[in-house]
Length: 281
Image (cartoon, rainbow, N blue to C red):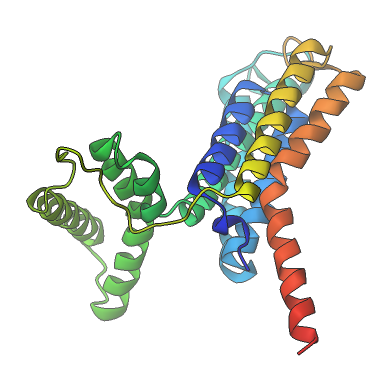
């Protein structure tokens, strides 16, 4: 039961933009943990435990790899774990690399959730009239990785190829993109007619609950950013790790956590409501 996907595409788009901006510009270990946990839980809910846990595990591997690589190539910091020859392996570099890996892993999970929520129809509904070509390119990019995965499974199951799989996948992707671009051009996509606007197959109208959720998202994001900027919450990794926080910083963390877990909370609420209705039948 995906109740969050039933909201207007503008609301879903604002949510992912807010989460992305906050995660990128507030480089804080607590916030990165909140982002990773919330997006992992949301991805597992959307994909299911059997399929989602594999991708989440790979994202955790990215965190470990980034931490190890940064510790090997960067030797700043004063807390030495061990020596590799004459080069020190410091705690600060290891932790900073894990933070960078967490940012990368959380971004991958975030875009995975976005690809599930923001379908091509919703993207065209939002930006098809103003930016038709950029919108078409973005929608094709979102469907590229799922299509490559489906083509890979089909090739392995039907032909059992061991060599040339990458070349075949690239050829299929280019052929599909060429066919889609040609078909859209022949159908007059992006051309404006006098007195007429482009129509969309997605006819979801903006309702009161969409406005209410949008206001909540914007308030939580703006107030949380304001509290974080005005607070004394700071993290320093070099030359030694130093972390300080205050009440305003804790309030910002609370608002960020509330914002990031909103879609999962809406979906769980809709599922519990549906189960309650089914139990009465």
